[in-house]
Length: 359
Image (tube, rainbow, N blue to C red):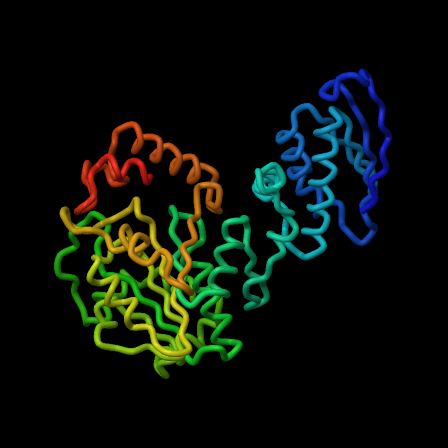
């Protein structure tokens, strides 16, 4: 994309008062509708992100006028969005918002490098990272034997781990995928469920099956499960096993006890990769039970080939309100002095003032 400056300074002595204009020529092979969005939704998102800047599109040219600093930033943003479109990633107002956040962050990163970072190509579509945090998380999985993905709902912790598992299986880096999670009810007591053992545990494992169906041929999944190439089982089934040449994902790890977490981590065999995901603010364990996820970082910090990745509300890729809700609850936790569950509890052996200092 070509940027043609038409600079004019209304007051050379004051940088914040200078205005400039840039005319951006979009390459002919880039459809303007893909860049600007349906009914110019993407263009409007750019203007909303920079209220002091006027952006006008005509033909394959985009004119940007306003304060010099903001015009330069908008021009960079549009250059990045063109590269994203060229890579085949659809643009939405949410993509624009995330891109602006990347460009204006303290450690700025190019949106095109994040949004075009391929993780898995399957069933006619490509799974890519959507935030800087997600990209770092996927890179950590690639570089380490054990990776912890810790963060709130909607940040893609489990989905991206599943994508890396399927990728590892397809590339024959592992012989099987093992997916597990603790069978703990989310604040409800369902009682004795009817049916076979499989029927009883299926509701707990359903999110893992759903992710698999997004990434693989649904008809092939039962055959792979029957052959043992893919195993989906409750955490209790891991005891006593040694898991070699496997990609192992432990989901909802905040609902493990400290003993269960130790049991799981020590199942690691040769040629295997482990990813542990969870949200320490959504613990469903009975009162008085310490979450294994909450203490494992204190235990394993400094151990080689183990990485802890923290995703935040800025990595949420669900509805915008999900991020706002997470931030609102975090503020409430701080104001009320709770531990993220609404409980005024502390970790065993650690005084409350130390816990607050670490948080």
